[in-house]
Length: 256
Image (tube, rainbow, N blue to C red; front, side, top):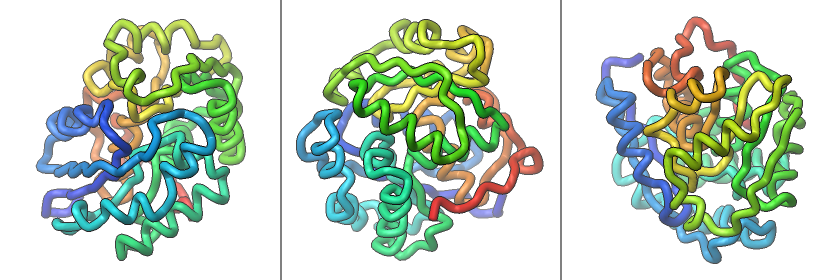
C-alpha cells in the first residue's frame, strides 16, 4: 500500500443502504477514505427498462463533479442490477464510459457486477448460490453475467422485491436468513447481489451462519475499489474476500 491514504469514490443510486459505506470505512481503517455521492435513479424499480435508464452514462456523469471535488484513486459504480442489466459487453462499455468521463484509466474504474466477478475469481470459487432480492427476470441477467465470467450458478432464488427502498428495510435476521435459506450443498460461496441491501455490520455473522464465503454487494464494491487503487492489504471482520493478502490474490484482468 502506498504511503498516502487510499481514496476511493462510489457513485451510489438513490438512498437505501448508503450507510454501509461509512461503516465499511471505519471497519477497513488504515486511513482509507471512502467517498460516496448519490446518483439520480429516475424510477426506483428493479425492472429492466428502469434499470437501463438508471445506469445510463448521463446519470453517472451528472454526479461525477461532486465526487471528483477530491482526487480519487479509483471509482466504482456502486450498483449491481443497473450494470449487469446491460449484459457482459454493455457492462464493459459502461465502465469504459465512466472512466473516460472521470478522467481515470479504465483499470481504476469498475462496477459492482465486475466486483462480484473479480471477488469470485480472487477467492478461487466457481460454483455459486445466488440469494437475490430481485424479481426472477432481473436475477436471470445476473446469472448470465456471472456465467459469462466463468462461474457456475448451482442455485438461484429471487425474492421479487421491486424497489430498492424496500430492500433497504431488511434487517440482520432477515439478511442472514436470506443467505441461509438459499444455500446449496454444491455451492462454494453465496452471493447477495444488491447494494440496497444492508450487510456491512453482519459480514462475519453471515459466513458463520452458512459455513462458507458470503459475498455481498457493498462489501465487494468496497473491496474492488481498494484493489483497483492498489490497496490489497488483508483485513479482518469483513468476510473472506477481505482476508486475502496481496500475495494470495491472483492477477485479475481489467473489466474492459
